[in-house]
Length: 509
Length: 96
Image: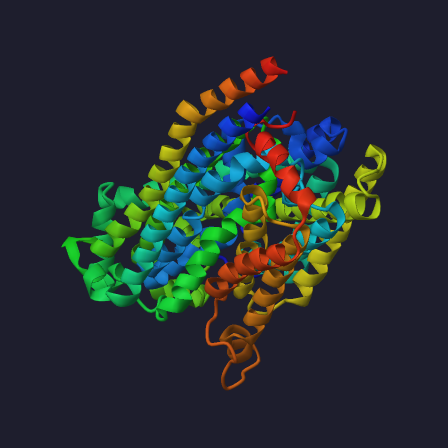
């Protein structure tokens, strides 16, 4: 394993090849990106399998590849609890969200919430919810990217963050959703085949029997590695985290946006089935990689390189496939980061330009030219923002930010989305109150939780005893949306429901 | 128009019912698994055959259950819902 500052030739070559390939894709995509529909929704012409792969590519972050493999390698079974949490949100997405969203909106999930409500006030609130999720998710990814690339390629943290920001900017700025989609597809295929090859090389040493691998792990480290450990110590906190992961997936703006890239509701639905199959297989493979690293690399060697275990998968690649395979896996991890940040940036740019600029400042009346200019301006703004914050948060523990992003998505975006589509009595004031409460309450409770008060600020105790607020904020957001809607009835919104129900099923007229 | 609306509302209710049942099923399975992890660690630590604990088996089954629930939804909608919507849509257009 190369130490920081000791670059690997194959990793560098893989990294250069991936950047060249993805910029080639961007060049082709740029020539096909003529209007806002191309820029935000790839012209609505993505197939179910393509979108399934792209959804998987948008969702599987470097944290889930390297982080979960590391967690399994160091604590066994507990890593599986995490993988499961990241998968169980998808049935919710397909059952409640994918098709209605596709049929009701054009570019953002705010399109759906604002469908029969007053455009400007709802969109400001929904854009705030989206941008909060995007910002925290993006910071977590950028800081993770800086650390990872430093470990994998020996580049300086700041250089790594800048490279990720600039390359991602190139994809989104010139190639829009078409380039982003293809980068995500290539990444999903690379990540899945990389994990698959690595898992096969591990299993080859255990006569292709995963149980033999687990048995080897338990004879070396004790049967405790096959049993729940300390990860779930407080059941309230565990369920709270679980609910945020489950319903947060259905409120992530960059995931929701992908449903506008397919032609119709049926394709949206089938694409989720593909995505879930791919993501599920990937998590099962990661579980094998984690145990493989535990047995073949050994826990002390993994901890020696990175105390958090993040280098378990790359170390395993080196142990079973040598320097060349390590380089390949490192390049895959890099591709993984880029595909996720590109999707996030595009979703943030859509909230800023499509929701705030076009529908709030211009009241829905802006020329295509102007919309494209504002969309690209927002993209540049977000890229600069992510590079600056990525560098500002250097050395900080930002792992909680992904949980925070999921908690805001579940508490602010998900309730408003569900009520706007399925409850006739939902009103503009109700939507505003629910989204703003969900965002503010999640931020406040996380700030008052032990994660910030004890771990970061080193106070004695925290005002709010739980690390995850979802169990409280999700039902409260629903309740506030209902109460405020009842207090401020809106006849026009009720009348619009018949049109909404028709379009949910028939699609755009 | 009212006929279209009534038929759509019925279909909407049928899909909503299935969606809620499947979502509830996923929630129960997942929360149940987390509760077992929280309250009965020794049970999950039971080794069934060398290398396979009950916890790992159940964990994999939770992932499989997510696939199964999605398959149920996709098969029902592909087989019934799509045709029903197309029916109502055709009658709606001809009625105009």
